[in-house]
Amino acid sequence: MEKQLLSLETIIGIQVKDDELYAKYRAEMKYLLDKYEGGFRYDFKIQETLRSETENSINRLFLIYFKNKENKLSFFADPEYKNIREKYFVPSVESTTQIAEYERYN
Image (tube, rainbow, N blue to C red; front, side, top):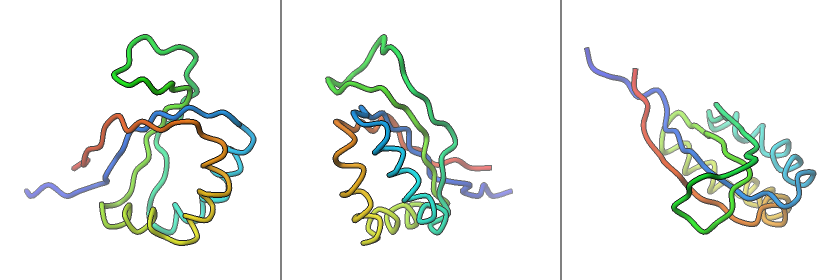
């Protein structure tokens, strides 16, 4: 039996500096995320980091997924997403760290 790709998953750590604006970003981009068959599996607020391989501070950790790499690339290239990102994400997030990316199969 051949394995089938279930999703492309990425674990991201960010340093949020404006929770209210970041919440607006998440709300505004949700329908686009759905359109590109993506979503969040996990989402954490981090109180303390015990070990890190980056100098970036991290107070939020989440796992974002897409059906495949093409959907992920299309989502991040979408002009509407770019506008939402510029308006809400850029001023609300101090730094971003990609921790891991992998494909999940059945």
